[in-house]
Image 1 (cartoon, rainbow, N blue to C red):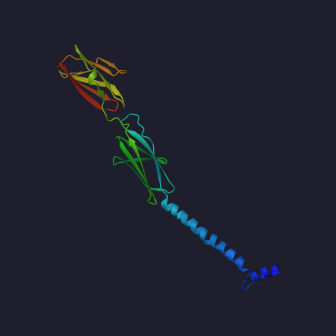
Image 2: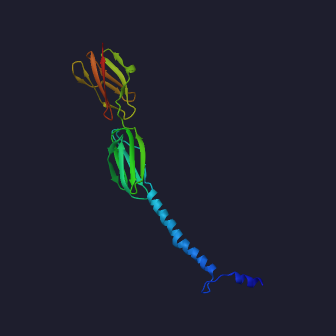
Image 3: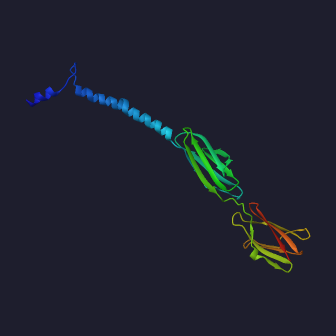
Length: 217
């Protein structure tokens, strides 16, 4: 009795095919023929539209404290449309080096690198450059020792270092004289002083120069 009743509950189309089976296959066709491709295609489109580029900037490197080298490494899912660099707002040239780029800097300041992808998305990276020596050496006024016929003082530079070989002076007669003694380990410099005045010039290894005038009076 129950078996006959279950058969009676089944529905058939005009060709005798089970409508329940046809309904199940229709759902599968909808899922794999429309819904899944729709989701995949639109997901890919969304990914391409919103994909952002990446950019990495290395720490500045210098060998002479006059210029610094920075390496720029761009990346991302899509090719770049543009890659620019500025230092304190002024354009900086980027030289391609394989898949990376190199920038040569001759000033301190904020380096800004901007990568623009072909889809218009932008990535900006900033780094501070402060290792270039733009400050002249310091002559310690408290160290000045003016003796009989000589003057002694200490000089220092905390970045590129003092260029001791460049130190010279102009005396009151206009003669160019060299130090009589230089102690590089302590920074102490001594000059003979045959006139009442002495104009001393001291450079650091980056070429920054400081003048100092010493007078007997």
